[in-house]
Image (tube, rainbow, N blue to C red; front, side):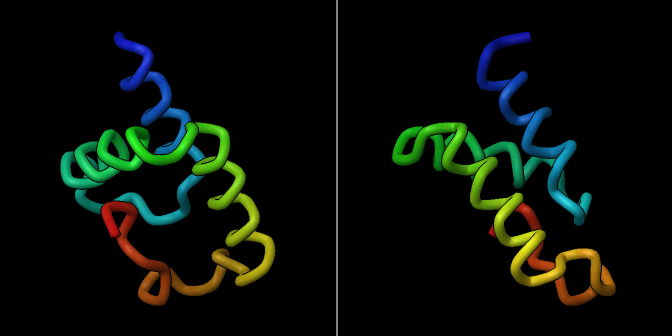
Length: 65
């Protein structure tokens, strides 16, 4: 498993909505070109806390977006 794949799996494990994993992986790899991995993870965790992403899954964006 490559470093990017391991990073994506770490992201996938913390993101609360598990939809369209292939599309999410492509978007994640593109995001890594512009933003460091830790910044992505920190942003997800901050959003989970600030916006209560434990709410109904229908209101949580797909991970690819």
